[in-house]
Image (cartoon, rainbow, N blue to C red):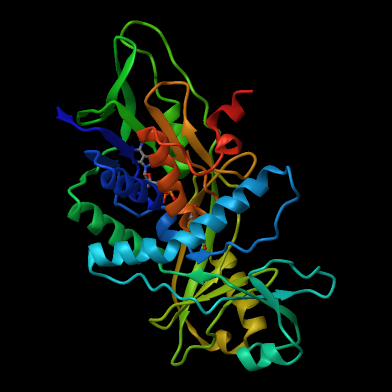
Length: 369
Ligand SMILES: Cc1cc2nc3c(=O)[nH]c(=O)nc-3n(C[C@H](O)[C@H](O)[C@H](O)COP(=O)(O)OP(=O)(O)OC[C@H]3O[C@@H](n4cnc5c(N)ncnc54)[C@H](O)[C@@H]3O)c2cc1C
């Protein structure tokens, strides 16, 4: 049996980022991934680092998420630089900003990092948009999450993080009432710390038998559930937009390689990753209504992924009632954005350093009450 200081279950953007941060702090880390690293929700994401959402009122729990998102956004340039250097590859970080198009009745968002466009300015910035809109330019960025996950995996290997793929973690191991590691259907792995980063599948890992060898049972309850998102990408001879564009029923994310991503549905339909042609057609049409040239562009790819959702739309970050067992999941629509800060605060908790944020609003305990 192999021995490590920490086992990270799940090699999505969250598990990979956390593993790297734990390694940086000197821990021997093992990542266990049942399939291909970065192959689930992180592969499906558009890669918007959308940190400028309307701020929630004081005392609202989403206020805490907003602060976490802003902190993560600020970490991104350094995070990308470190990952690109360690991996020797680029992740297409683009900082042109997001143009949010507003319906007549919609209030103007108020934020230090946004600017209301003057009349005629939208047409100058993005001349192919059809129709008149009020618009706000948000100081946001995008990157390619698929490239990011490949780069994170390469950086992990470069940093001597062990990675075992191909079989799911099926249960936690206990000896004399203490957590001692995990089992997959092929092997056992020993470590005093285990972190559940299994995304939309986190609750499945939770529902395994947590009975210890001395007969006592420990349980935690993770109410994560999958929230399906379908998207497509199109390609054409010339780029049709430079900025990310967000309208009320569709968003467009340009990549430097010429692809344009069009997203996305949000569907509460269980563990169903089928691509439905009608849903893809609706998104393509909504994009073409906004920018007629898109109607002429070839569909390059269509796909679906499962966002890890929670009942209150907040991530679940922290220790559980089982000593040594931690959770970092439930990042819903913002897991790419929140990866750097999640890695930092979770590594703080795990290594006993005071976390830079009050993590109470994200505690796994909130669902036990
Ligand atoms: C269409 C779409 C668009 C999105 N756009 C954005 C965006 O623009 N910006 C943004 O910030 N976020 C976006 N998201 C959300 C983002 O993708 C997720 O929040 C993020 O990827 C979650 O990362 P994760 O590592 O928790 O989960 P995942 O990437 O799903 O990784 C979980 C991993 O755990 C593995 N696993 C599961 N069970 C086990 C087990 N028992 N044993 C071992 N391994 C296991 C899985 O195979 C998987 O690799 C989008 C999501 C979708 C679907």
